[in-house]
Amino acid sequence: MNRTLKSINPATLEVVGEVEVTSTQELHKQVRVAREALKTWREISLDDRAKCLENAGQALVDNAEDFGEILSKEMGKPLKSGIGEVRSCGNGMAGKVKAIKSALQTVVHDTNTTQTRITYRPLGVVGVISPWNYPMAMPQWMVIPALMAGNTVILKPSEETPLIAQCYVDTLNQFLPAGVLQIAHGADEQGKALVEADINLITFTGSRAVGIDIMKRSADGLKRLILELGGKDPLIVLRDADIESAADFAVSNSVDNSGQMCVSTERVFVHEDIADDFELRVTELSKKIRVGPWNEAGVQMGPMIHSKQSLHVANQIDDAISKGARLLFGGKHLRSGYVMPTVLAGVTEDMSIAGEETFGPVICITRYRDLDDAVCQANDTVYGLGAVVFGRDEVATELVASRLEAGMIGINKSVFGVGDNPWVGAKQSGFGYHGSGDGYRQFSQVTVISKALD
Image (cartoon, rainbow, N blue to C red; front, side, top):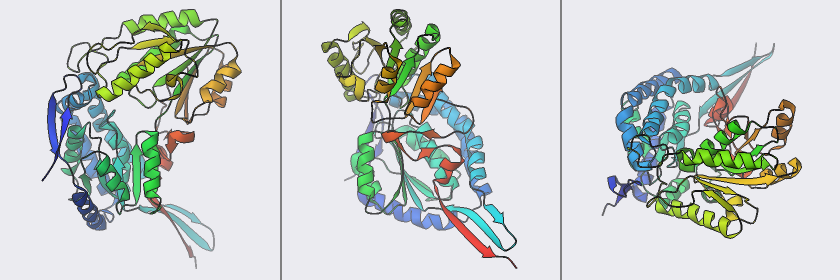
């Protein structure tokens, strides 16, 4: 008997829609279909692959409002953000495809006697396991480079957001040959089956614990992996920092997407001389954030994805308060599934919120006197995705940045850069990375061909 997966609106707990769960037998059939489709898709030129995906990008733009509403209903983010995510994926498709095409061009080296060509061939079948927090943008990061490289793809989206993932796949499949892109719906059972199936590359964005499990399950087949595994990002506010700018960043980057973002600021270290003013301004800004359902006018922050996540955040807050943290604002549920923007001061290392990933709208503040100690605490984590430092002295901020153990570092701004730069984690936040020429080439088999010249 076929099972169905229900998509739940986290703001109302109502059913948005449902999809049929992919059985493990059907998933293995999908792999066989992908293998067969690979024979022709890999022979299609880069230009023709690019054209297919560029057309799909325009279709996403054309459907941005309808798809954005589905995304917001499923995930809970405000409608403006939902539409913006879809539109960004569509508008960014042509540029992304162009960059990937450039990265996959054959490189030729010649001498008088030898010619060497470096080519980028398809790997085979790629399994993409994507999260719920950016349910269209995250699949796109992984699906598009895989397809452009000539691979076929099976996408296993989060069980929390299956409807928008189906919209995405259906849209791309209007322009792709049959079998090149397929979708497998389900939860842990389907994810594990995909990892253990006869595929060549697994690319995953999600928790560190699941990443570890994927590595274990893929070991026997020596499958290639690209893993983005979350973070516990620090913000260091130096003594001479612009308090207004630093506080504004601390709040916005902690509560954006309800804190459900891998590069959310989860720990703030502020110099004791400016801590009072900083905490006051952070509290004032947090009070101004409007929380509510996705379709309510003026809402800036929606609910958590589900009650399990909101309970996790609430438990961390309660643990911190019980161990001496000062609650400056928030700390309560507005209604089922919601967590208010919360400001905690006096956070110490013995609190779970100081070490474990929160993934919720909490600004955790720790005062420091000695900068070396602040840097040491910032680096005292298995994670290393992003880190930020605020300060007016350029030399001092650059020095702190050079000591932070993270793949992406921001100085007086977020970690988001300009250009097609890598999205990369250090330590246990990442294995491989997304974006940039080197990132795109991870989806290919690098082949070196050398021949003698007459």
